Length: 448
Image (cartoon, rainbow, N blue to C red):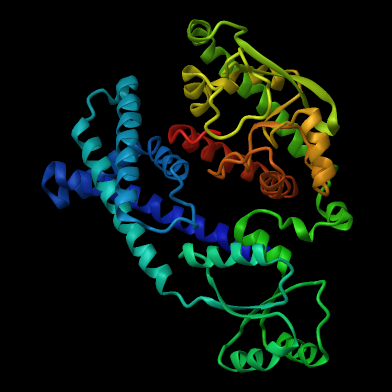
């Protein structure tokens, strides 16, 4: 699926280039509105576009942060307009700050900046509507599933086909056993260049082997069930994992450069956050103390990289009295009112920067578990221990999924799917994506 993954990135990059073009066009239209003269605006364009060059990159950052390059999210007008309204306000704020603090730009008409922000937002909305119309009319590739290892994962894929307009696939047929062969052949006769997703563990009848070998010469695409699922849902199907999968895919020895860069970023990030938040610590501590007497910091032993234990620190969000410290559940009544706010805004996580500075944690990684809980989960869930080959993190791929996951075996399976996907695909690009999505999660108050 590497080609499909590259195609996803190329599509996002092409959308970004369109956004950049619209930013430059918006400056011209802003000058036209400001001067009410198309010819004069053309003369002034080169002079003024230089002033906007430092501002335009922020527009792309805001678009990315608000997930407007997320190909899994279809265009919905009543959801898109508020996002672009926020971007327009942010663009105006950045532009105003830039012009206000730049002595060479103090006389720059602020009305041009305002027109630019409004026009850019309108053009971007129209651009997204056009893209949505184009992608919805593209013929989707017909997928033939040859064998199903797990009905639940097939259901996940089918839901993705239904809910994501930008997914360029649709289900054509599911072959489960020999009785489906005739119907499969009939379907294949009506489809050009089908896509085959096969179960590696399935024994195929000779007739079907002949058909698949023939289709190889017709430029059809073939993907294993595991790689197709991973590409589409960006998580790992646990039932396909065995010792050989882990040996092939979970190997951090070739990520030395990445890990060095990540460690440098962790230190810089922790120092900056510590300096910026330190003035607010006394107020946070006071709020915790006023509502519930007890320690300000919650300290608990967790497992770090390679199962090395360490003391995790957070601002306390739960009552001390009648608390048996069992794992937190959704809507847990032990959480205080202040604690609910701290959790939703992720403020309770701030003291973990001390763990990052000590090298026990990273900004991004799987969440660290309690030793006793991890021991039990490791007995129930195969290869659960593989998530400890890297440092645990404050945020991660699972934490931004928007779904609450309890410490139950069922939910831990879901967490492990995301954790293994992250470990397999370690990269700066993926980390940047997680950071931006974490920002949105915090502002939408979807913290877990």
